[in-house]
Image (cartoon, rainbow, N blue to C red; front, side, top):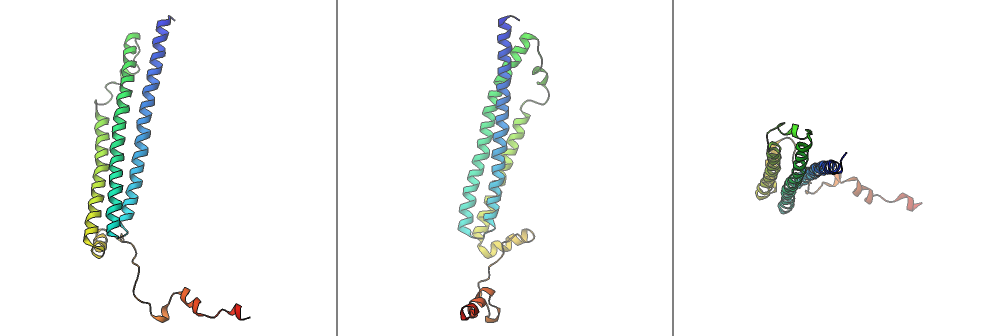
Amino acid sequence: MPPRRQHFLTEYEKAQDSAHAFDQHIWTITSIFWAGNFLLYGFAIHALSTGNTLLVRAVTSCLGLLGVLLVWLARTLALQFKALADCKFARCKELEWQFGFSQHRRTENVHPSGSQRRFYLAITWAFTLAWVVILALAWTLSSLGVEQAETHLQSLGPDRSPPRIQTESVPPGLAPASEELQTEPDTASEL
């Protein structure tokens, strides 16, 4: 094999490996950031169930901002890595034309150009919209007050409100067991 041809074959191999590595980075970052968003959704929904209006606004606002930043950062990084991978694949296609290969040239018309980017953008907007709904719910519920918010949450579905802590005085005969134990004499110390 002539040295020049070997040089181009090595370049082809390295360009392909590099393109695959950038493609792997896209999905690694995407999966981590999207999983992180679902975790943040859980924290925000838990904060909604606390009933503390100032805490709900503060926590959900911070989580919402972080979630939106993460999902758009993931999209930005994915587009940057995709552009790098496209450059590497373009070089592979040039070398394929030169040497009569067709591995990457055969995949050009598998799906419409830009369809995956549009799908990724749609998912990014869905994550953002979910945060807008959570934030709107948090600000609406916290502005209603605790009693009205619990009534509103109960109207949304079965048993979505947190358990209420009773603050009324307990009649003497129904005192909790821990108080009864404290009033009884200690028989062990009398012996």
